[in-house]
Length: 137
Image (cartoon, rainbow, N blue to C red):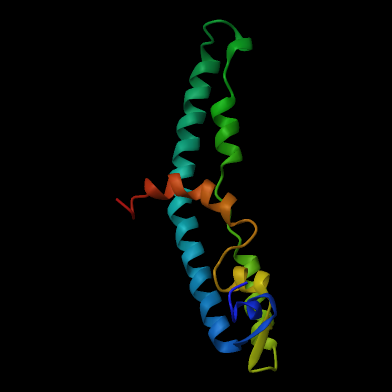
């Protein structure tokens, strides 16, 4: 390992108030991404449901050939909001009595770098919708 970097494997101390500030910043970005994506997802779901209703109303080849895959795909790609994780971490840090908090690499990754275990799935769900958001256009 490079000289001096071995310390990165050990928990390090960080200023509690700076951690709270970073978490609040990351939480705000998370909410914006979710709020940009959700209306687009809702519109796409509504459009797909209308198309499905039209298919069901006048089935060409009977009900056996009706395709529910678009609805299923949209349901599985519904944007989700994980503010609970941010709120929990913020509350813990706000109630902590220490001025400095010890974080290991994993905690730093989540709290500071905003790389939660669910983050990739969140990005997958919101990126395509957020790009179509009226706020982004």
